[in-house]
Image (cartoon, each protein chain N blue to C red):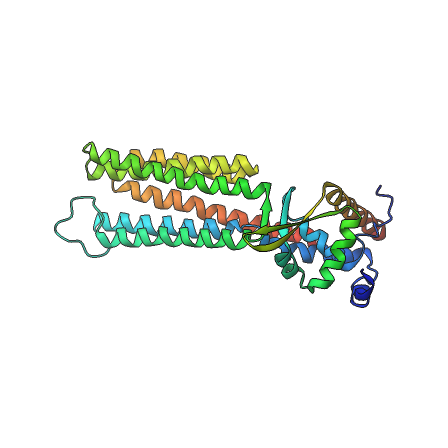
Length: 228
Length: 101
């Protein structure tokens, strides 16, 4: 069966010396990294979304930046700030979904199930959060209380899911980020509006950005170790 | 096992690249044929030939299935193939250390 194809086959089967083999493996595995999700991109987009989005909310609530209508209460960010914040979060979500789908296309097996369950835990977590917030509003929670609760619950969901992701893939840095976001949830709630926004942006968004940098350094180091 | 001789099934450019690519996937995962082919820049015929050799050696498992009405072929390393690749890279490292000393 294989004989008719043997000429190109033989050409590719030229004998290799060990150093060439090693280089070939490294080059190919580097290329095959496109089969894995790039943490730098995901931490980066969420880091920027939180950092910029929340700092705009903070600046707007304090009246430092942007227009404010007279109808706004004290410590209440303007509508445009919420619009930018929301767009940044939606953008980060779209980037995440597209990136994960492109990277995982054509892969099936045990890890696909793990990944799907992990992905669904985000939808379940935020779905439940939305329902809880609606329930709180219905019970008469006012603007400030809702502001605190929504940020606290969101951070709680994010933190807990990162803990589970860290445990699932045995990635300590993801676990540490989860624990960090849980601390941010607590601190941000005690800080009170509008400082809550500052805490979420600087410490929460900053946490993502730090992890992006860590991820990048680890990658560069791994590549250098191979090149040596 | 790692006595310095290199596994002839893997010690060929095309098959080494196939195995190295599949080894990036977590254990138990498989890759669809078109995506594997794209990562390797090989012709379908050429890749099939090498996959057959790897399959004959028990290093890869080839599963033909359907997704909707489209036939899809998935390729994954067998535990034996993964072990063979690990032993191959260990032998390489040993040879390279020997050469450097």
